[in-house]
Image (cartoon, rainbow, N blue to C red):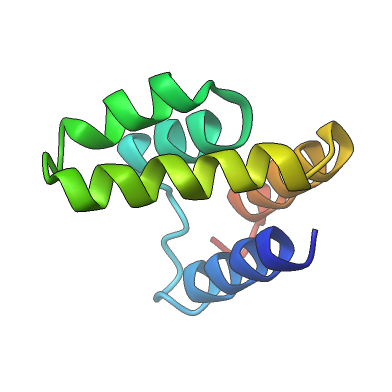
Length: 92
């Protein structure tokens, strides 16, 4: 979970230092949910709504396949739990 953990922790740190409003945009929440728990096709289709560039979509699919083949279900649940903790933080 090194890469995913680092990305989640970086995102959490950025949210905590963003001036106190840790509300995560619903679009980002859906993106993260599909990235961690969705299929490659669902995730690529979602990204395609915002960036319909063949090179970006090819990279998106490769990254998603790498995450799916590298991270365990527990790793993915832990990454999602960090996001939930950030959202629940009383300082936000």
